[in-house]
Length: 349
Image (cartoon, rainbow, N blue to C red):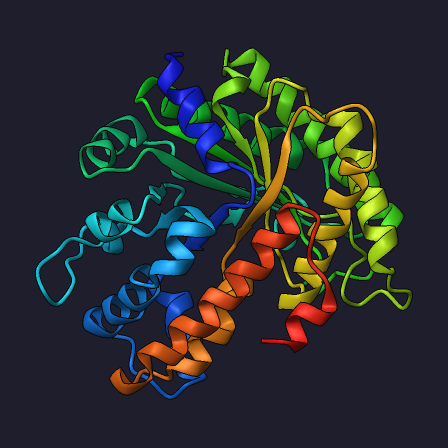
C-alpha cells in the first residue's frame, strides 16, 4: 500500500466532513423521482446531481467525497464540465459504486439471504474508474436478521466477497469502503436492539478476519457499518442514548485501531435521527481522556438528499432552494461528526 491510499482514507474522514452517497441505481432514483412526479431521464438525473454538486458551501465545508453511479461518473453538466471536475474543484473526492447488487444466496434461506455479486471483471473496471477520476469505491453486503438467519454461509460468503473487492481496490490505487449492512428494515425486521448488536458483532469479526486473509491494509480502508438499532417492526424501539452506547460498544469490540475512520450508513432512519445518533456517539468518544483511534462520520444517501429533492422538485427555479436544504443537512451532519449537533440548530434553520 502506498502512502497515498492512507492519505485518501484519512481525507475522507477529516474532522467535520462526511461522504455523500449519490450512487443510486437508475431503478432507485426513479422511485425517488416518482415521489416528486418527475420523469427519470439521463438529463433529469444529471440536473439533480449537478444541483447537489454545485452546492458550494456544502461541498467545500462538509462533504469529503461523493459515491457515484456508473452513469454519473461519465456525465457532463450543461456547460460541458464533467461532474467529476465540479466536485473535485470544491475539494471533494470522487468515488464509485462497483458492486452489481445483492442476489439470492442459493440454499434453504434463498428467500431471505443474499450475496453481493460483481467480482467478475472488477480488476478491469477499477482501472477504468481510476482513469475517470475515482479514488475510492463502495461495495455493500446485506445481512438480514430472521428465524435461523443470518447463516454462517451468508456471513462467510459476503465477508469473503468484501475482502476480495477490497484487495482489488487497493491494487488499483483506490480506497475501498467496506459496507456490511445488518438491515433494520424489511419484511423480517422484528428483532430487538440486542439481536442487532449480536449479529453486527459477528458480522464485523467475520469481515475483518477475511480482510486479514486477503492481505488488505486496514490503514487504507473506510468501514461503513450500520448503527446498532432495533428492527423497524420491533415493538420496543430504543432511545438515541441507547443506540449510541451500544453502537460504540460494538465498534470497540470489533474494529481494529488501524482503521482510519468509520462512516455510518443511515439505513431506514429518519434524517434527524441519523444525525442525532451520530452526534451522541461522537459525544461519548469525545468525553474520554484517551483519544479514540478512528473518526466517526457519515456516509448518507437519502438522509442527506431527501429534503433537497423535495425542495428542488425537478424545477430549475428551485435549484437554490434545493441547495439550501442540502447544505443544511450537510451542516447538521458535520456538527454531528464533531459531537456538536443540537436539536435547537434544526429548528433555527
